[in-house]
Figure 1: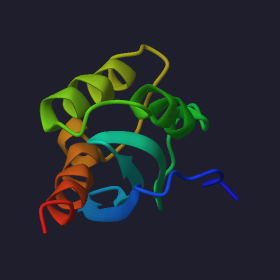
Figure 2: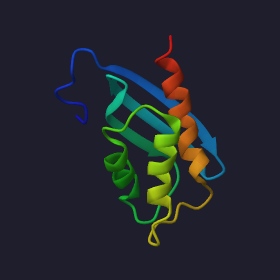
Figure 3: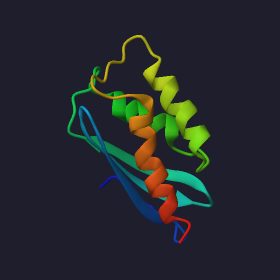
Figure 4: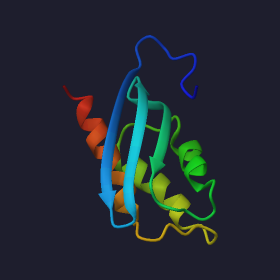
Length: 105
């Protein structure tokens, strides 16, 4: 169980994007316009394997703002040890855009 002790006012949203390397999916718990918790999954093979967990750690607590997300994802992509073949920064940002749109309803 990844989502434990969820605040009562948190909302759950998700976004999916098909990158050349495969599907990228984010599931977000948003509370007070911040990412309370998240899960990033996909059917691609990142190196190192734990890079998605690193990305989640960087994004947790961030404001629900696409430029903030883009900068955080770029921070991970720019590491010399990271390789996610068939993806670009924008491929990881797109599912966040979809998820954030769900909060506007």
